[in-house]
Length: 368
Length: 128
Image 1: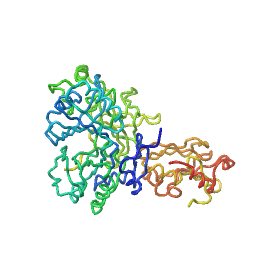
Image 2: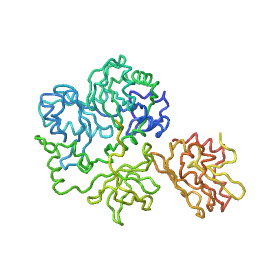
Image 3: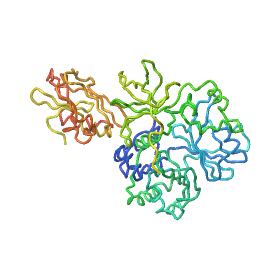
């Protein structure tokens, strides 16, 4: 493997003291001041994340909508211009290629925002599917976009200082294509992966460091801090948001992952995996995602087995100490019949059975 | 920077011998590399520990790490404060964040460890 790739914000991370790691081939900060500290900061004030490693693919043309209806499981037809939805690309088996956001940026223009870890695979998949379709053009524009996530209750007042555009008019899961943020041209969406209010801001790579400094400057009076991948994971986990590779994978469909509301099984158009999903429902899902809280002092981690009365019933997908709830919690798949709230189970940790109980997901919902 | 009478392992544990007792913990390098420590699993008083083998576990937010015994012996004390406050290891790795005290069975094993000067050199060569 060569040197990790650098995002357009690399120098900003160095300047602000980020602890860089190799994240799927990218040099990105796992933390600055500390994961727990940064986690609390995002929930109470605001944090600034470099998420430029995410992939972006444009879809345009006469058949853009028809193509997307086939490519993804959610109903893209309900998007107005400027609206965004969360969805999945599925294999014909019903398992997941990736989860992604679809931004409708124009009449027949869309932007797909996809996981960094799956970029190559997703791009190949999208191209393969697009080849079957006329009058649709797809382009991988990942290298042309830098992206920041400004997340937390103070995100709006911070960003508002830098623009005349009334940010309060941007509703959750809506975007504005062309906003002037203190002289930098940006696409701004009210989206995020933390469970807090916030914005994801796309700009040209050449404007990246300048934008960073402007946002950090505006955020100073509100306590804005740069935040890394470590707290990005604990924040999304508390908010019950899935991570591809853990809650979703090649074998697992959105149905097992409690994401049914994002699957439009009743949409008229056929989509890849539709028949397979219907079959999974007819046969009964083989596993379901639940939340767990430890009843004994121990931390559940990915892949730890779950048992009940001596029988293996499942496995942890994501587990961690939760800084906001101050408890050890996990998301896990268990077999049907074991999903009732309050059910006591054992998490196998270093060959010992540690008691846990099934609790509601998500673990955390931001106060409104 | 390092207390002078400490000896160190390559896994960044320290040991401080005082009469017939040896106090053991994680070095500042270790706690810095681990990040926020959220959980500590310690042996029980009376347990045997063996040089080079795990005697306990520390968990940071992101990872689980074994702690390796610098010396062999019998556990005579454990730092109960770490149960409710595992972050003590981050705050004070060489003092209040001590993990266990053992009665060493073979002080000759100290020769296998690095003294402060050697550890400082070693630290420079190690990646986080």
